[in-house]
Length: 608
Image (tube, rainbow, N blue to C red):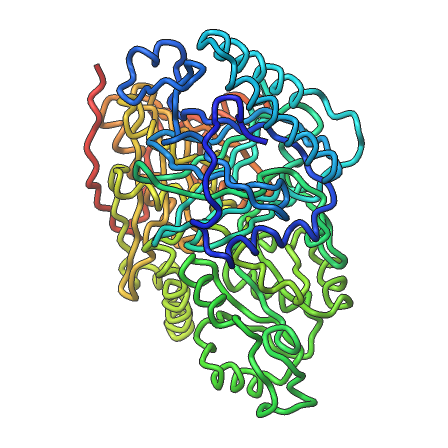
């Protein structure tokens, strides 16, 4: 449902390709129930009512409120789609889709009836003879819709997913951030959708959202396009919670949601027989195997997004790798585990080789037996039936932005394999080997140019994230303009090559207090965190800070990396709600093992 009281322009379906209209109609055959969320146009920078007189972008609508979309929400009738119409939206700067609602579900017939009644009543309001009367009626109508949409959902029935359908007619992809938050709650579910040129359909599992948000209680929901130009046009179909037979909340053989956050996928692990290719290697032979349709494009897209790729398969190693080479895709696969051991062991070895958590792996497998075997040993892993492999790029855990850093991620791991080979051949202890590597850490302040990579790092980092914070772009932009906060972006390299951007840190300058510290797992156990800690302690002591404080939220994941604070001898001052305040006293000497050469290119912020 949309804000029809103040948006009355009707578009022509002929402006969309017929094949796109057909794609919008597909979901009607799989969706059995849907919510009715009253979407409206809103502003990311809203400071109502003062902005009505101070904002250069203010443009009054019929009801006197601000017009945040060029032409408003243009309805295009599309019979056979989930809600019977599409919304054409030309975004202005700071424009966002916003609504209040719950996940209360309706049959499609009841939802259709409610949509028709809403549009009919809006038409009546728009035909009222006096401007003031139209404005008053429009505002009252929408206020009632918001109250109605925000009634508590007492039903125990919950949707399977949030369905978002969109047609992007532009040449470039558009990134959209989704935020869902219960009112007055500090917790929020956040996800990012990559809206590629053409039609796209995204399903975000309700289990992921409900780990942070009570969908039965009223919530606010935002869809905000990131970094777009004025006039960027998108066509939206369904934007509701649905019961969708094409998406199972907990598919057979899949692990239930067990985490307090929405996992990002760092590696897709493929089974081979009847999953990556059609046929069974040991029975059909190499020549009769065919690569599944679209697999090469999926591998390429995952690689560009920085999502690693591996394989776990019961096969003869050399024969299976030869098939991968024949298909021209062998280079995509890192640390493939191809043997006759249980696949749960192969999964464990992939995670260990990549130094990432098993809960960041997505395992694609055709056999329900193998999925159950893996799930029994690794209940936090994400699993996908091979029959749904085409949905990988649309899954929310795989929808991450493409950056220069992400395109290089596979090469970073290939360089790491070279390092490991050199270490095996090195005659001496491990610390001597690290010195021989010539590790260099370069520190710089965060800028607009590095913001995208820092955002990616804050969203992906788990094992070496000492605060647990995950910054949105808007929050990072606020840090840029905060004179009280010193930001540090860390890049690392050695004689084997570059690790890329590997860390981010924030310090409240006036308090000499580190509030955030996070590193990529690629530099774990290389003494980089120790080198940075030595440098930062010296830096703030030279500025006159007698003591240095650290905020540390210890978790099972970051506890091994958090040992750096023990190594330096930080003392715990107090603990409140799981957050520890650590202090490094002024009389304590700052250790420095000299393994990593540190170059500081930051500028000190001057506070007023």
